[in-house]
Amino acid sequence: MATVAKLSLVLALAAAPAAALRPRARSTIAGLRPALRPLRAGVDATPTAVEDLKAELLAGALAVGNNGVGAEPAAAEAVDALAAALEEAAGKRGTGAVPSGVWDLLYTDSKGGSSGQVGPLVGEVTQTFEGDRLINSVALFGGAFRVSLRAECKPLELEKGGRKTLRIGFEEVWVQVFGVEVTRKPNGGVGSWAMMYEDDDLRVMKTNQDSIFILQKRQE
Image (cartoon, rainbow, N blue to C red):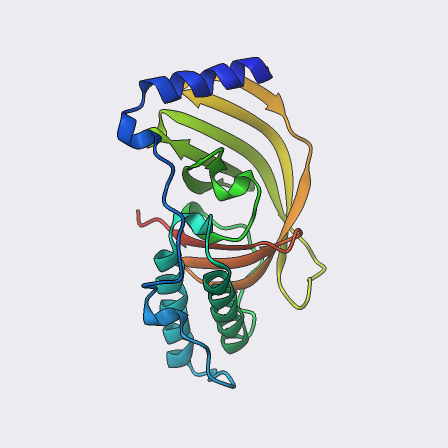
């Protein structure tokens, strides 16, 4: 199976335009938008302040770019600070319910494959929810090469640090090349998401590995 997966990646690389094979540029702190300025002491908890912090966090995550992969330490710290300030201002807003729809990853400090990084390349990461099931996909070359993972999402009664939490039970992973499935295998891992902030179009969460994820809901 590993050989097939490697061959699939080689085929996808061979078929991609040369420009698509270049690794994405590593982000730097230079030129980041004012959203990454140091936070003032104390956090205003009014609705306007929450919306302002949300806008700043979105701008900061997008300014870092690249799903957060390769972010300079100062940029990563600034995004973390904005996320913490938003959580405090909103009072740990989160329902703990399984989300719905399709969500795009904007930023993470995770060093694992969930960041979308495959070797020197970084793909587009989406989370698609169907009932209590999640499909997490990493797409490269416009979807010519795609790795997907299916997991069960289950709300937990116990909160972590006052945060509503979902248990994520991984079930299987598969690889597709040009829409054709080339390998599939079970995956029995377990993780959790603790919600720092959640509304109709933004989710900010911490995993059981203490990685932060910022995702935005795709408009239907």
